[in-house]
Image (cartoon, rainbow, N blue to C red; front, side, top):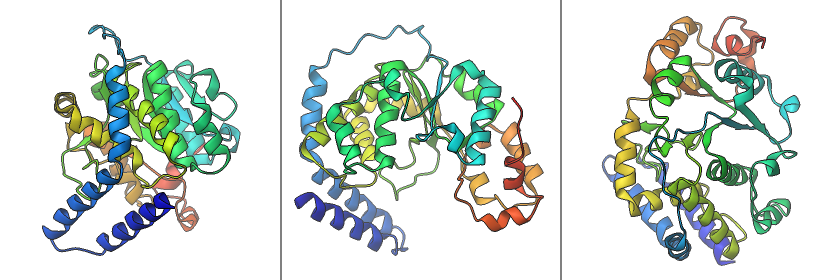
Amino acid sequence: MKDKFIRLAIKSLNKILSKVSIKPLDEQLYSLYHKFIFSCLNKDFQKSDKKYLRLIIKEKNEKEKIPFIFWIMWWQGIESAPKLVKNNIIRLQNMVGKENVVVITKKNYKKFTQISGNIEEKLKSNKISFTHWSDIVRFNLLRDNGGYWIDSTLILSNLFFRQFIQKNRLEDFISICMQQREYHYVSLGKWQSWFLGGKSNSNLFEYMCLFYDTYFESHDIVIDYFLTDDAMAHFFYKNKQIFNNYQNRCKGNWHPYLFAFKLGSKDYGEILHKFDSNLWFSCQKTTYKFNRRLLKDSDNLITDLLKNIDL
């Protein structure tokens, strides 16, 4: 009952804040809102921190590279995925090699990682949404194997691989760190859970898996939709040196939502040129839940993205 009340309070506050548009007041209010969420999670953070301190984390070989393996998930199986997702997977396979892409489904995930029985039972009983299950799976996969998590709706250009992924192969953790401060979110835009990379047993991946196990030992519901970002924010606050080093590597003037905002654009040639030639546009988060009316026009960005691709 207490968790349901907290979740309702957090939802209500977020709804109220979304209607505030008085700067800098709204930024201050969002800061207080995030502090309130942290206070609600304080006991879970304390328990996780104590367990984390007892972990023996393997020393990393500085010359060891992030494994060149790309994890992408479509739970029901690729055959049931929307056309946009299928095309994204084929694009990724064409760029990095089919052998380096693993499509995670409900049938094969246990081959690559083991998630606690307690969490799996809460998924089966609908106490954990599929959104949060996806978060749990990605961090467990990365902790156990390393590599890169790519959301199924993410489109990457060759430039992104050459100038960002290859450049950062020796780092423990990488993501997209926005230049602009996105104060509406606890992450402030400093990472994106739709693209994560790193070595196995990375400090962050270890902590996140430990946090999920700890949290769901005491809770049957997720009190905040952005629970994953809450835990990441806490980890980075407690490990500021790791966070500062990460920001120095990954911060840039990224524009990852250009495609999403321009799916109906007829000037998609110019958009695709930016995507192919400018690093800050080379990583695009799209959606398969677009307005189907856009498909009536055979000459726009979304219809180009949905064209048949051969392996």
